[in-house]
Image (cartoon, rainbow, N blue to C red; front, side, top):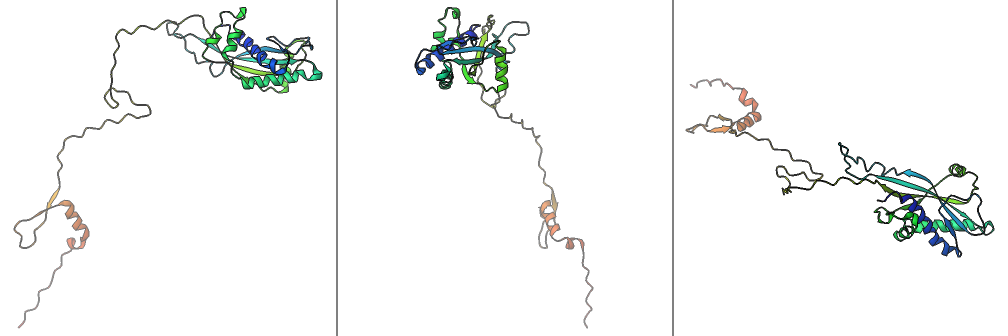
Length: 275
């Protein structure tokens, strides 16, 4: 998190990062200015302009700090504006020696090798008197530079906004993510008067349900009932004294095997007497 000086601090740090890396590679002194492209560029000295032409809210972090106040209006969380910075980097120099193209190539390689703004460069840029009080170096989120693709129509519109400024070879980069904190601090939470800690195993009454586990269904109480087995009396065979009792299942099974015998009775005629 950082204060309102973060935007200017990132611009100055980007210009310093390019100056520290492009100059030694180019072989001569390169002037890097954090300003818009000049209307009358001087071709005597190689020059790079770093121009912040647009500031937009970051779409992924725009609503992460809502809500910041309680129902009674008390501030519970410090608001933070998440922003993206869009830079136009132009190069100027002797066209006969293709100085502008050589400078742009060096800029692209520098930002591709060092896409995240280093902390030492931020601290070095913060030594400017007009950046005194900036706390960008203590921010947890580091600024990252990403090239932006622009077609001919978008490039024409961008340079058309620069009144009476001739076109120069340039590249566009987006810096994300820059936070700007609010000035008002949130109200501290109330102290804990009496801490109560309970330890319950999973499955105990009142214990939390483990993540991804479904709560077990409470078993239904079964009333205590007597199990009664149906029994049927079966006539005992000849010679038996008492009738035995067989389960109804056995009787039903016997009847199912021989249904004809249980339903039909055979009558035989008496034999004639012999003389």
